[in-house]
Amino acid sequence: MLKLDQVLAELGMSRAAFYRMRARGKGPRLLKLPNGHLRVRRSDLDAWVSQLDTPAY
Image 1 (cartoon, rainbow, N blue to C red):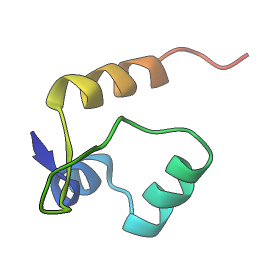
Image 2: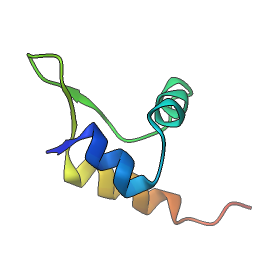
Image 3: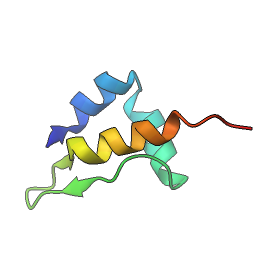
Image 4: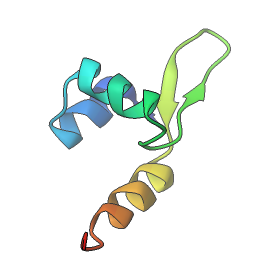
């Protein structure tokens, strides 16, 4: 499970841009822990990134 900061660093994205993307229904699935912290499963992030590799026509 990756911390949000780790995901943002890997994607090269700001926190604000990430949340804007999530508000539009895009982005990897987030898990909220009981303490309120957000995490992303590595498999969810990899699956999301791999779908970005499809060409846009």
